[in-house]
Image (cartoon, rainbow, N blue to C red; front, side, top):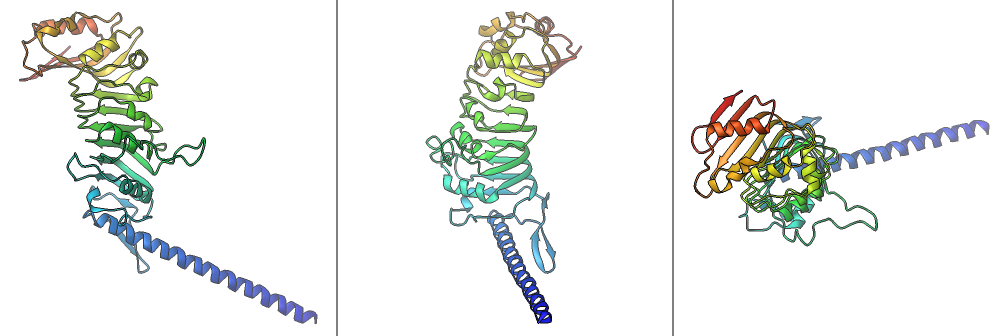
Length: 367
């Protein structure tokens, strides 16, 4: 009897092991099937935009190579609908550059449902440069933030982005805010934000939707109608090294708090309009250093009063560039090269080079 009980226990233990083995095999088969589906869906997704991902073959199965460092894939939104964007894709792919763009005319809005589903499916993007082009989203102003999951719960961010360079090109401020509210930049350290072709942006307030871990620089280019640089990144001195504004045609302002924040931290590169620089200079009250300073000035006679201003304390500027513009072909400033050098000497210290740039040859002076 005792021997029978021992045999019975052994049989039961063996059956349990077999059952666990069958369950594990089933789970592995299910996992393999899921991985295979994600691989096929991911390859098809990128193929729709005419980009072939690098693949590897192992034990007869095709896998997507984790490092996608060849080429610069561009995802064209016109190639997709809500139905053709997969629910899931292979995660953890690493790119040198990845772009999502609308190839429709800039006046045509893109379907927010397609963009949101694409963000969810991608899940996480690892790219040295992540670029979004002409994502002018339908209904962006009415649905700036994703719906909250409940009272006191922050809205979900759909796409985790690991990048050093976030580029927004030809995107209006409402759509830019909509996009930034759906990107999770919390693990992107020392990211540089580039706003290219920012012709329709009037304020930088939409940048408050971003949640980067740390920002190394902010570039704003071709900001023709920008009226205010007001944003938390500047006001809280969250930008570490670079702030460059170029192409601003309208008067640009900022709050006293933001001007004070700019004027009380060191910069590697700082580029401002003449009017904005005058406002910043008025806030300098202790040593202030910039390695490369660019000031864009309307070099016309009616604005020659700009050259009369002097800061109470000279900032340290190693390399000064004066961009002397005449956007509306008005009578030119009476300032000559010697006058500009005298002004520079009166306003800055520790200056090694001064460059004057206006239509025609550049003039560079090494001091």
